[in-house]
Each structure stands twice: as C-alpha cells, then as structure tokens.
Amino acid sequence: MARTCPFSLCDGSGILVDEDTRTSSYCRCRSQVVATARARGLSAVIPKKYANLSFDRAPVTTIRDSIVSYVRRYVRDVDAKIDAGEGLWLYGPVGTGKTSLAMLVSKAALDAGRTVAIYSLPRLLAEIRTTFDDGSEHSYTELLDRLTGVDLLHIDDVGAEKTSPWVLEQLYAMINARYEQERAVIITTNLERDQLAEQINERTVSRLEEMCEVLPVTGADLRRQTFGLVEEPDPVASPVTWDRA
Ligand SMILES: Nc1ncnc2c1ncn2[C@@H]1O[C@H](COP(=O)(O)OP(=O)(O)O)[C@@H](O)[C@H]1O
Ligand SMILES: [Mg+2]
Image 1 (tube, rainbow, N blue to C red):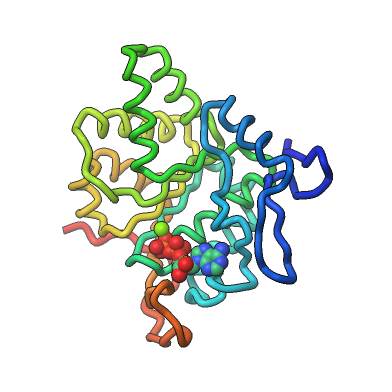
Image 2 (tube, rainbow, N blue to C red):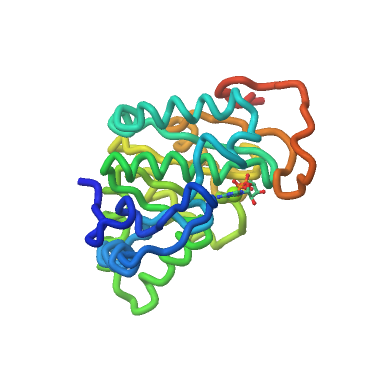
C-alpha cells in the first residue's frame, strides 16, 4: 500500500512540492517517512533534490525525446515491468540526466505502492561493510534479505569508486539473489560496460546485463548548460545490446 500523509499535506512521500514556484520542502510527516524507512533498514525515500522531478519540466524536458519516451513507457507499465523483473541500466556521461530519469522510475514505483530501496553504490557498499563491524553475520544476512526482497532496487552511480574484492563479492551475492528471484534493478553509471566490469566484476555485470534494458543517455552535460541544449543528431533511439568483442 502507498503511504498516506497523516496530516493530509503531501502525497505520502514526506515532501511538499509547490507546482507554482517549482520548489519543494519537507512535510511535517517527513520524520515519520524517514523513521519508517529506517525501521525497515533500507533507504526508501527519493532524495529532496529529485523530489519535484516531472516529465513535464527541466531537466527531463531537455533530455533527448527518444530516451525520455522509453523511460516514460517503463513508468506507465511500472507494475508489469516490476512483476516481470525487468530492470533498466542507464549509462552515459556525467550530467546527462541519468539519475533524474532513474528517480522518476523509483517515484512511480513508490506511487504504485511498491517497495523500493534507493542507494548510491558507494553508500550501499558502506552499508554492507558496516553490518560486519561488530562481527555480526546475522545483520548482514538480514540486510541481504531486505535488499533482495524489495520490489525495485535502485543503485545510482555504479562504478563510481573502487572497493575491495570482498565487498564486491557481497555485491555479487545480492545482485545474484535478485537475479534468481527475477526482481527488478535499476542502475545508473558513467562507465562503459567493460570499464564497469573492471570496477565491479564481470560476473555482476553480466547478471545485470541480463536483468536490465541498457539505455544510453547521451547529450550535453545539463549541469554546465546555460543557453539550452545544443542539438546533436540522435544516435540511439532504443535500448542497445553491448558489442561483445
Ligand atoms: N529536480 C531538479 N530540478 C531541476 N534540475 C535538476 C533537478 N534534478 C537534477 N537537475 C539537473 O539536471 C541535470 C542532470 O542531473 P542528473 O540527473 O543528476 O545527471 P546524471 O545522473 O546524468 O549525472 C543537472 O544539471 C542537475 O542539476
Ligand atoms: Mg547521476
């Protein structure tokens, strides 16, 4: 069930969006939203920066149509996609809108009452690491169960940092568990497939590849853009299969 705001102020997300001024602020119920997510031991809230995202305004309107319409279709069929365990892999240069698009998907899943865990990969790996701090293997198993159990696991910035082989092994275990249970994953990354395999292991990447549609998010760096998008020819209009040498 989707959460409802006890004060009837927000849509249950803990964030108030003012459509007129296009700004967002925390709702009175925000602390409860965070507490609920924490109680479940997972991060399940859209970061504030991305809370007021919409397909109808920037930055999403400045992303190439062919990419946005693909994500829009995923969002429209979000229940079916999640039930089928179909994920999305958004890759491309920095600042092209990957995280924004992925957040729209997670928001749609949350709005549909599905369970979602949202992490940057560095944070997720840190979380895995800390379960071992006190030597308690039990809490690691619990974390793994929870991460495997959510309807949608959203991992942002995959490959952003190098980490130890041991931690990467735990990441593989988690992705593999979701693979076996056919549960959807959405990832964003700046890296090409083979670079990613170097960072997080070939085995993990090849699992993800099977679980996700690979969607290149190309275009100008929206963060550096002041005068609107410089139109380039539209090179890719649909998901790709990586060229395997
Ligand atoms: N809610 C928002 N409102 C307006 N601009 C945003 C919002 N969220 C992100 N942006 C801008 O959109 C651009 C792309 O951001 P992002 O999706 O984080 O890119 P990527 O993940 O590809 O690096 C950046 O310029 C960012 O500042
Ligand atoms: Mg990003």
